[in-house]
Image 1 (cartoon, rainbow, N blue to C red):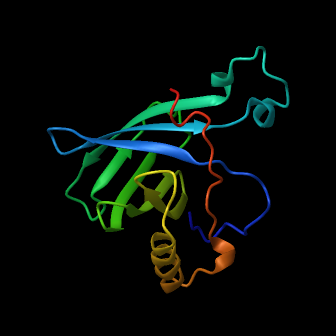
Image 2: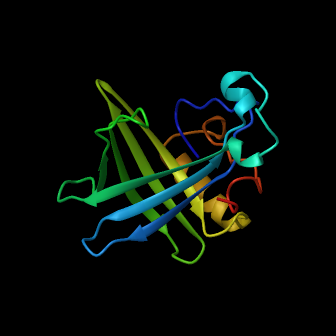
Image 3: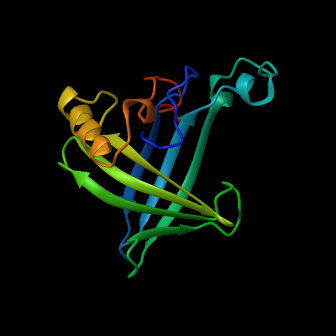
Length: 158
């Protein structure tokens, strides 16, 4: 991930998975699975030993638009805290990786980030280098880039 607000700190951010499914109307339905330890969320131990308690899953639908931003999710429920999100595919080789621009709009705030997605949990050095060059072309530095920590938790077991 690359974002101008990131300053490469030492906190742990774990890998997540996003599955994109194309729908007949041209929209995308996504399912995101991620690991967020309960301990870091509420500073309390889990109530039992079920490892799935640390796993979160949510679904979103991105509609095709005729705007400059091709895929937009309008979240009227507010369950994600970001009412409007745009995704634009910037680069891909279709078999290994995709680079997406993700723009979140909330009230008067707009934040943007670049995400490097892989088809599996391990990206090749070439895919990472492609992402690194692309990000630096946009005048971001190594301090604005981080790669998620690999994890087996929650990605495959939901």
